[in-house]
Length: 143
Ligand code: AMP
Ligand code: ZN
Image 1 (tube, protein in one colour):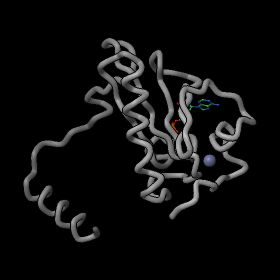
Image 2 (cartoon, protein in one colour; image 1 turned 60 degrees about the vertical axis):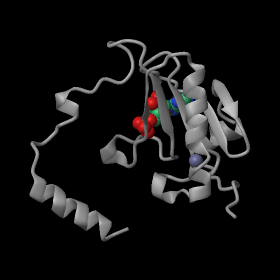
Image 3 (cartoon, rainbow, N blue to C red; image 1 turned 180 degrees about the horizontal axis):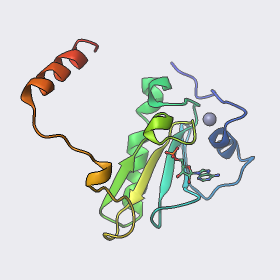
Image 4 (cartoon, protein in one colour; image 1 turned 120 degrees about the vertical axis):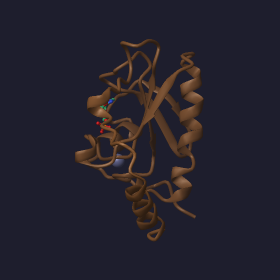
């Protein structure tokens, strides 16, 4: 059984959980903490984090990780905005800035607010079945 007491004293989000840095708290339970993003891309943009400190998803024990999505669902529904995105970045190249795992819950009330994904930031390649087959095999072999 994993303990939830796993804290990095220099971590911004661990300090928010502890209360030494203030936040606009939305929800808290034994394993999970939710607060408003300080620079929201939509009204109600929240961050759902484990109390257990892990830099990226791969650092979290499965029992910690399994607590997060049900809470993300609960707070997303509480915004009253029926359309929303859940975003989770891992690593600098992948646009992570705070190295304590967090799920962004971002309401999408209209076309202008919230997450915007265009061709430029979702650069899809044309269908290549051979490449897909090779990729699928490579990943399956690592499971
Ligand atoms: P990411 O780029 O995925 O690592 O997201 C980090 C998020 O944390 C950004 O959206 C920031 O606006 C947010 N953030 C940074 N500092 C704080 C803070 N003190 N309170 C709330 N949100 C914060
Ligand atoms: Zn932390």
